[in-house]
Image (tube, rainbow, N blue to C red):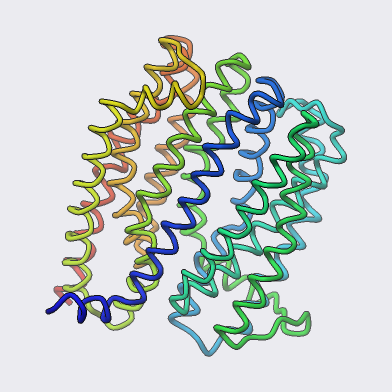
Length: 424
C-alpha cells in the first residue's frame, strides 16, 4: 500500500490524533507557562490550596458514575436509542450540582480540605465546575461516538487559550478563587459551542419531556464498571494528593504539584496514540473482528513501549535539568521525586494501551476491581512511605502497588479475553 493510499484510509485517525496532539500541545504550553507564574503570584500556600481544590473537582467527577464513557459505547452500539440515552445523562448533571453544594460545604466546614476563602462561595463554584465538566464530557462523548474527536479537541484548545489568557490577568490579584471563577465562566461558552457542534454531527434533541428515570437507571447499570475504572484512577492520582496535603508542608506540596503537572503534560500527550482508538475498538467489536483487535493491540503496545522507553531515557539524561530551570526548585528531595516519577510515567503509558482496549471492549469488571484495590492500598502505603522517605515516598508507594497488580494483570487478562472470543 502506498503512502497516499494509507493516508486516505487512515484519514480520520490521523485528523483525530493530530488535533489531539495539537490540543495537548496548547495545554502543555499553557501549564508550562502558567504554573511557575501562579506559584510566584499566589505564593506556595495559595498555590497548594488551588492545586488541592482542582483535585477535589476531579475527585468529584466520579459522581459522573461512568455515564459518559458508557454513553459513547452505547451510541455506537444502539444508535436508535440516542435521544433517550442523551437526555438521561444530560439531566443527571443538574442533580449532581444541587447535591454537590451542601456536600462540598460540609467538607470545607469540617476542615477535610483546608481553604482560606468563604466555604459557601467555594461550595457553589466547585459544584458548578463539576457539573460543567460532566456536561462537557457528554458532548465530547457524542462527538467521539461519530468518530469526530478532532472537533472536540479544537474546541477544547480554544477554551484553553482563552482560559490561560484570563488566568494571566486575574492572577495579579493573588487569590486562587478568582481562577476558579474564570474557569466556570469560560466553561459556559465552551459548553455552548460543544452543544452546537455536537448537534451538527449527530441529530438529537434535548428536552425535559424526553428524560426518563428508567433510562437513567439502565445507563447507570450499563456504566457501572466504567465508573469503577474511573474510581481507581481518581484514587490513584487525586485522592492521594488531597491526603498528602495533610502530611506535607506547603513547600513540599508545591514541589509535588510542579512535578505532577510537568509529568501530566507528558502523560496526556503520550497516551493519545491509544486514546483516539476508542471508537474504532468499539466498532471492530460490533463486527466481531477479534483477530484484528488482537493484532491491533499488539502493534500499538509495541509502538507505545518503544516511544515510552525513548522518553524515559531522555528524562533520565536531561529531564531534571529542564525541570529545575522551569520550576526554580532544586533540592535533593525534589530531584529524587522527579527521577522516580520518570519510571512511573514510562510504566503508566505502556499500561494505558491495555486500559483503552479493555474499556473499548467493555472487559472492565475484573480489571476495575483489581485497579480499585490497588488504588486504595496505594493511598495507605503512601502515608507510610512519606514517613520513611518523605516526598519521593509518594511515587514509590504508587509504583510498588501498580507493578504488583494492574501493570501485569491488564495485558494478560485482555489477551486471554480476546483469545476466548476468537475461539468462539
